Length: 200
Image 1 (cartoon, rainbow, N blue to C red):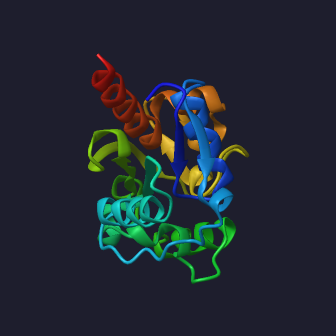
Image 2 (image 1 turned 60 degrees about the horizontal axis):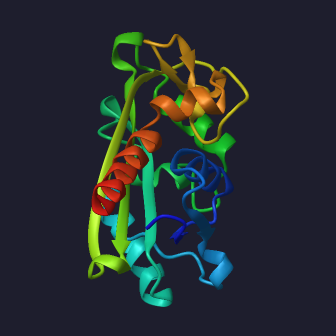
């Protein structure tokens, strides 16, 4: 699959940047809008289901090897919210700021010990070169939710997500630092190892 085109079933520029940075120059990553594919409705009840739904939609439209990611924040004290609704937690026309405000409001009653959370990511691959098989790869990143945002990098819930091992919020990490520990980085690394194994 070296130097092959992979379609990312997303138009999110932040995700595209991360995917390119982690997979490297061996792969040409293009977004679905380059093929005039409209956003695909995410109707799944899990990150895995949504990743497969998005990958399948783009693959069926193009016939080109496709990868799709679905990811979000999971807070156990909120029964798994925001979960698959992370991008639209404050409503259908949500933005990052509104989602963060909604999260802080819903967690305002929780003490430090109850603010544990994790980012989860599932990446689905539909591989044209191997009988259109579907494979999924999962990554998680454990942390806690801060009372106030810290940092200006990243996107989404990054300013509120604190990694106690590193001692920084996700938004305080450089791209290079984040791409070593993030949920998406772990899932993409597993994907990359799978692809390399197929070539051996």
